[in-house]
Amino acid sequence: MRPDVQRVTVLGAGSWGTAFAKVLGDAGRDVTMWARREEVATDIRERHTNSAYLPGVTLPATITATSDPAEALRAAEAVVLAVPSQSLRANLTAWRDLLPRDAILVSLAKGVELGTLKRMSEVIAEIVGIDAGDVVVVTGPNLAKEIAAGQPSASVLACADHDRAVAIQRACANSYFRPYTNTDVVGCELGGACKNVIALSTGMAAGLGLGTNTMATLITRGLAEMARLGAKLGADPLTFAGLAGVGDLVATCSSPLSRNRTFGERLGRGETLEQAQAAAGGQVAEGVMSCSSIRALAQSVGVDMPITDAMHRVCHEGVDPRQAGAELLGRSQKHEWS
Ligand SMILES: NC(=O)C1=CN([C@@H]2O[C@H](COP(=O)(O)OP(=O)(O)OC[C@H]3O[C@@H](n4cnc5c(N)ncnc54)[C@H](OP(=O)(O)O)[C@@H]3O)[C@@H](O)[C@H]2O)C=CC1
Ligand SMILES: O=C(CO)COP(=O)(O)O
Image 1 (cartoon, helix red, strand yellow):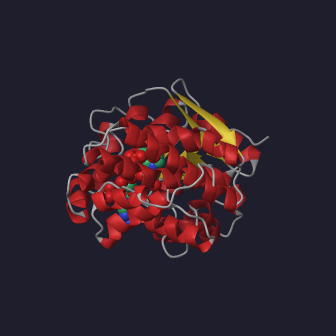
Image 2 (tube, protein in one colour; image 1 turned 90 degrees about the vertical axis):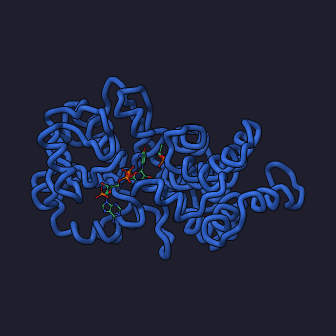
């Protein structure tokens, strides 16, 4: 068994990085955050708030913050990567030489990299020169605002090395946050990335004025297509019945707090991609990019993902949401599990 992890550095001070830092702080860990902008670091360090991302939330006074990555990483026993998927490679490349040698690397990002079609643990492993099985992936139904408010939630810590997952489990478990371990990293990461795309679709349906049956259909058929991709790539199909699959789909596809769902809703109401992006105020809706990378990944292994394909065509090929919906319904008829 690994020794207890006490000193944790969180790189990225957006919604989830900050909420997860609070989870760790409330679990009694010493947390240092890195924020890209000094004013965000100052807000956290001096006022114990991150008013840019989690207004109204008071952070544990034990959390400190800096905009200097070298200072943030000094003496870290675990390093939590909390920047958006498409910027992880560039950020981590800049931090690589600062990472303490034996620190456990933890990934919060839910996405698949454009171009390489790699999952985040694969990107991290490539840049740092470690085994992807040593990265701990955090995923599950974890809307940052609810967790920051101390509302109960469960999560999954996926890692091929069970000892590492347990070390992070002990470090972040607290009275409102219950982390489970899982060794199926492929399934857990794909679940987290794919559900963002499905949340775009349920938001879009809501924006078009459609109701609960449509949402349930998209969630269930979204689950079917992500499980198909996972099975093809070696995931355990059971993973998709758990927190990283159904759990996160339900949370993200139905909550007005989800950035992906909200983004989709705006597209469904007729806004352009640029208008929806401007309304997001700089916060990431990962599904907008992941619909393209996941679609390409699925195509590369011959897996059919019609909802993901439709989202790609709406977001990046200018297809009208109504037409995309009609095309989904107009596909050839088939058995539910074929
Ligand atoms: N929010 C949530 O509820 C949850 C999010 N996640 C996942 O966690 C990851 C991080 O999300 P979240 O914290 O919510 O994201 P946000 O958009 O809220 O914050 C992103 C953070 O990364 C920083 N950053 C550093 N480099 C870049 C860059 N090149 N481009 C953009 N931002 C950069 C931002 O800095 P700056 O402020 O200067 O822009 C900001 O601190 C995502 O993959 C998301 O899917 C997972 C579970 C829950
Ligand atoms: O991943 C999330 C909840 O588990 C957060 O979803 P959004 O990025 O859509 O807000």
